[in-house]
Amino acid sequence: MRLDKFLKKTRIIKRRTVASDMAKKGRIKKSGKPLKPAYDVSPGDEFEIAFGNRILRIRATNCTQKPDYEVVSEVKL
Image 1 (cartoon, rainbow, N blue to C red):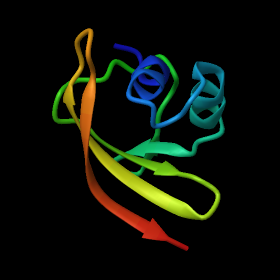
Image 2 (cartoon, rainbow, N blue to C red):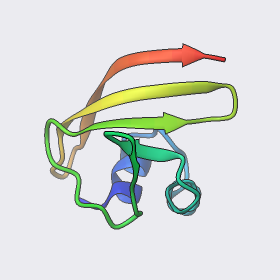
Image 3 (tube, one colour):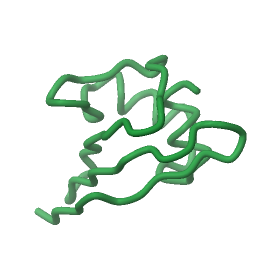
Image 4 (cartoon, helix red, strand yellow):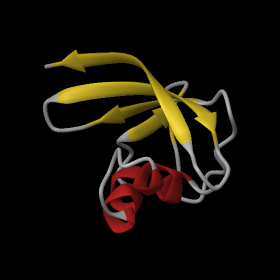
């Protein structure tokens, strides 16, 4: 499943276009490297998502029709 679609389906980000724009701006990273919106999410992948005042780190647990994730950490700036 595409990264932007995964973020929208899990309701981490409400709109797919917003998720796509965040990825294009380098605000979604995996192992310190920015990801593209078309990145193929696999179970076990860990992402770091930089919002305005917090950094959310998640792990994808399911990437099928009903995607799911678990929060690894959340840092408020």
